[in-house]
Image 1 (cartoon, rainbow, N blue to C red):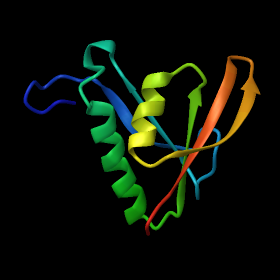
Image 2: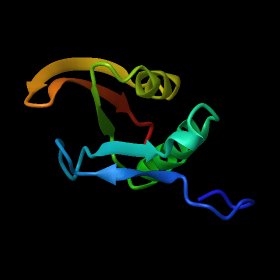
Image 3: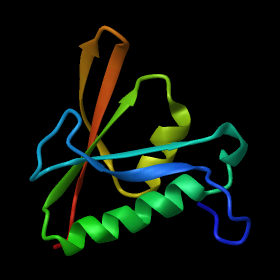
Length: 101
């Protein structure tokens, strides 16, 4: 939610998803009207800080192979590509980030 405008623009948080409780996956999604303004990067950076505070050592992210915008966000935050898997929905790229904890 944007505080000044008071509107909901998407979400960002940690999920189990394709990973584990000890090494969760960061997930975010914004409405199209909020794309390209740095909100995903800002929110994901805050979630990284919270994950570090819990003592976790590593986070994962999974992204559809064609999602260039998400790759840019994750690379800005220090995520690196780990491997690729195939799912019914297409190719999924796995990225990881070591936390400072």
